[in-house]
Length: 480
Image 1 (spheres, rainbow, N blue to C red):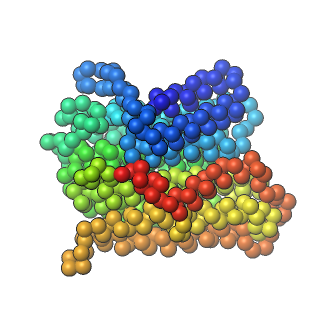
Image 2: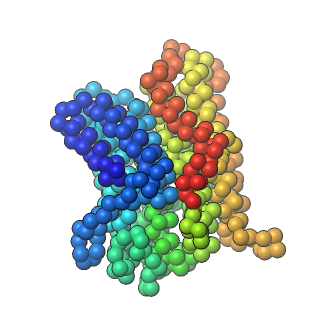
Image 3: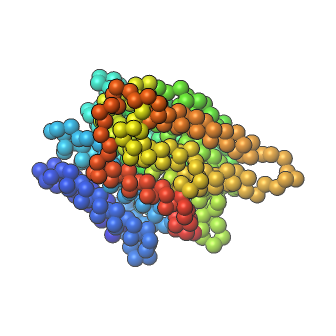
């Protein structure tokens, strides 16, 4: 079944290129993967594993498996894939490129998250980047500027991938094999390996100061690509630090902990202030996504400070690791919903410039409600998935600390990071007010509300935000 999760989108891509109905084929493949993905996450014992030798020296296996962490990321991938396939407006005559890109990104993301060999973990991610570049450069917003944005994104992510590969190779020369089960703390060059992994994975996640590619790329990309990359593919770097970085170089990660804390606070505070200043809704959402990565890095920093262990004695995840995975899931769902709704706003009004919008709640109340819901999720309103993840991140920063101790670097960073909640409230409420409140602007006078088909991806993602927010143990139990 795990192999089928990768093959279904790949075979659907081949079918589309061979003249099968593009939209129908994509929706069918995405729906089938959603069913299989949910079943695999709920019943991991029933899906087994896949493994066969590809190369003897170094030992590389094509191997797939599922545990709690990868199961949650798999569920995120299949949910956002279906929502992305339902979102956006494909330009006439571009159906093959549009829908095959969605499927290839989904196949790459799923393959990366369920791979249990470091080589294929890396390779599947690189597969997913290719259609991302193509879609931004060919079908992105911004006229000729989109090509420059596509090249900038390519340069940054290629740099991150090369640095990451260098770190993997340096660690791999000291490992028995590239299998995750054989990952262990290496004896030599831990500081160098840790730095390479932080820069490599960090660039792919948009860690400050390697972040400037992300917001323009998401603002320029077609809605489904922004949803998949910001919502799913960007979590590869965070997942990789938890799965690989802490395993092979725990002491090296400790060495660079203070540097990581400074950089993640720049994500939260500096990029948060930049987000407040945005006048374009897509740019604001792109910068918001970059900002919120800082919270997940904070959970990873808490795991590093506690010794680098992400597993408890009974085989579950630690508080810090659970917080990171839960917030990865919550952010993936909420940012995908945000980009989907922003696309609908642009399609109906012809603009996403905040100073040209206003009063949209009068003509599109359903759109207003759904955007308000995701705005509250982004702020961290209790009852929605992001709150559960963020509060666990803040608790993880103080895990093991007692009142008779001085505040350590992680505790100080956590206190500063809490101000990011205030920053989030400022820019999200401002965007909601400028778009939906106030006098009815000319561009919004003849806007029609969301149709059932247009609401479908938003309803799917909103239900997930509510269910996980009201009952986060639904995912936390999977992580045990």
